[in-house]
Image (cartoon, rainbow, N blue to C red):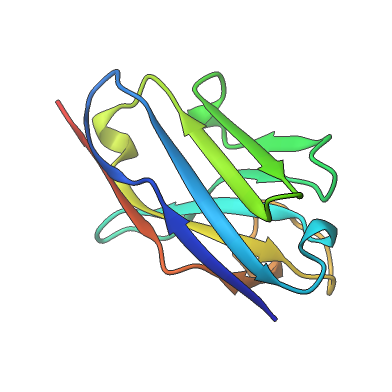
Length: 125
């Protein structure tokens, strides 16, 4: 089992920046690929970014490329999402998740076994 707790959300103006953190506890955190997803009211949860176990490979949704950066520090059992040039449409609850070993699909929720409670990001115009 892996426990995940997100933090760092808040209210920012358009064009601003935030860094989200996801602290993990449990066995062998470093062996899990990690992802960030987000969900706006009335919308489906969508993929934002993912990072492999070592941090050497990252994946991004098209709408955040060039603006968001996912990273991890396995010595701290933490994954980060640095967000720049935020837009109002980025407003959502952001969730971190740990990828399981049942299959592979970095952008699909069904492959992630563990989820945090989410942190709210609100971007004002």
